Length: 507
Figure 1 (tube, rainbow, N blue to C red):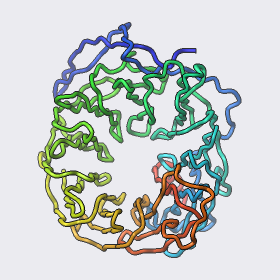
Figure 2: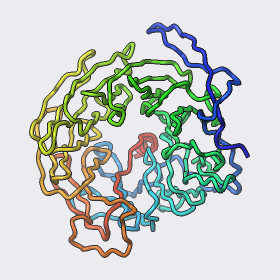
Figure 3: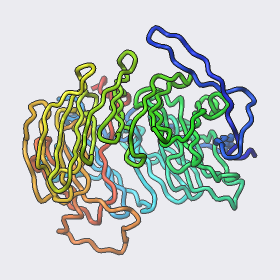
Figure 4: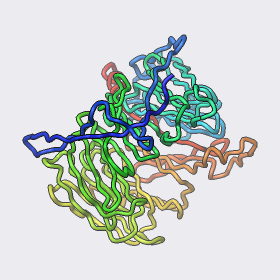
């Protein structure tokens, strides 16, 4: 059995590629280059899976329940849609619930499963199925025939601690912390979701440089063709999923890598690296073409990369503001926005050109909205002073935003199109604000970490911390749902587009 990591050192020479836009530099490695002990990469080994599961998720909607009558929720499309589904972890129970219109508390739980409080459960990225885990298993749940709801697939991984689904839902990654005392054991596995079979894994031998979770950083888009890893020794390695081999047979030749972040929509990798000065590098994968490079002044711990959901813009926190990359424009020009106060929050408008920033000193903060619509200019739309908002949450539709002062229990619903407040709510007991995919409803909830939950704890039926609230997009309280225990997780089912669009054509 091959070792999980192989020592390497990359020796490279460079060549240039002339294009109509500009001259780029491509980073290449020599075949057969020697590798030093301090620089290593993960080497995947093939898994031999015996008796793979026979159940295969079908292409129809797996967890959305259908009825004889037409679906009448306004979710996704006015007049034709599907019922909103919400996942909550109520104490030790995973529940999937739905409601016709969320205007009265007629919430129906159509799925309950005893959960392991130490392990997560979640929707798949496109919402095709629901995924849970326990001591030795990761389980995919759904409805294959529209009338039942049950277990579709099981994936075995001894003492599994975490799992991840690739953006296009083709692969499942399972993980437990490496155990050097068991050199033949696998600490990471990658499965084919469509067949349930294991493909590759990483064993426990030589794991001193193994990256922390999440180990696999998937490239953007839904084709699940590439992923990257960032090791403890700051080595970036890019792999392709056809063979799960390393691209170029060696890691990227980069020094002092701090972080990496993929575009949400394509195989463009943003890399934050260097010491003094820091720099941002954009690479096109698989050819490793350098699309852009920019030196920035920043404090390492405060420097973060923020992709806009369509991959049109990239914002990077710098010392005293933000550096913006216009990814889709010729030459990828950059703009700088000066913000000379402490930055508390930043968020892009989903699929839009606007963004919002919260900055200043608590308790009175400032919220500013900007636009990237004009080439070569970051335009200020409005600035709101003396706010008690420490976080912000855009509607999936992009026109509305909730400015939340979670410490003070205040919510402000703001219309960015009209640049006007819609409503303000006080005395909200919550630490999470979650929009549903249609942008019609907002859920607020006060969750606790899983490790803090005591299964012997008795809930007060009137405790405001044991409930979640559904609000309209305008800030009207629709109803409050009381749970039996403290809530540890809450999330709406995503809408990925492919599966439900096929269903909607038949309605």
